[in-house]
Each structure stands twice: as C-alpha cells, then as structure tokens.
Image (cartoon, rainbow, N blue to C red; front, side):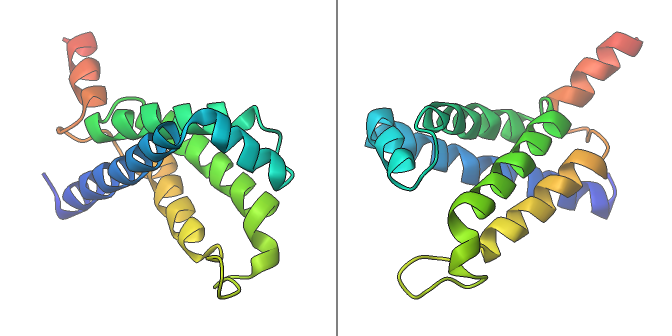
Amino acid sequence: MTKTAVVSVMMRVAMGIIFLFHGVAKFQMGLGNVDAWFSSIGIPGFLAYFVAALELAGGILLIIGLFTRYVSALFVVMLIGAIVTTKLSLGLLGDGQMAGYELDLGFILVSLYLAVATESSSLSMDRLIMNKRTA
C-alpha cells in the first residue's frame, strides 16, 4: 500500500467518523427539533431528515469504504448547500457567535478528493466487492 493510499484511507475514515457523529447528534436531538431549526433559518424542514440520514449512513459507508465516490459526492453537495443557505453571510471565520464556513470548505475538499481522485484501497468494501466480481 502506497503512502497516498494510506493517507486516503485515513481521510476516508476520519470523514466517515465526523459525519457519523453529526448524524447521531441529529437523531439524539430529535429529528423534529432539527426540522424546526432548519425551518427557522429558512431551509425546508424536510431536508433535516435527508441530511441526518445522509450523515449517519454516509458516515458508516465511508468508514467501511463502500460507495465512497457516491457518498463523498453527496457530501460535497450537502456542504455547498450548508454554506450557501446558512454560513455564507457569516463569512469565512464566522461572526464570533457562530462558526463560518472554513471547516465546510476543508470538508468539501476532502470529500471532493475522495469522490474523484482516489482509487478503492485494499482496506475498503468497494475493493473487496470489485475483486470478487473480477475473480
């Protein structure tokens, strides 16, 4: 396994853990509360359910390395939506009360890399499935 492959696995698993924890937090808060918060800031409330499910399931999928490209692409779209709808007006570093979009930009870049630049590593379900298909 090359150094690049090792770093890619580390990035994939770290992003998976981060999104998994965000998804779990939304479920612990209660999706009705997340729905209400989304609505209060001008985002359609029903998107709370999609975001929570994407973060939870997508985080798990990234950790195990299954559908990495697709999940990462969805995270890019979700993060751009978060910036445009809630964080852009706060600026890059925020306003002192709320964080800006600096972390979202970092997460977008990592997710974009995972979506377009990485090959399935030997430490992923994607590779395991692909190897079985070609055998």
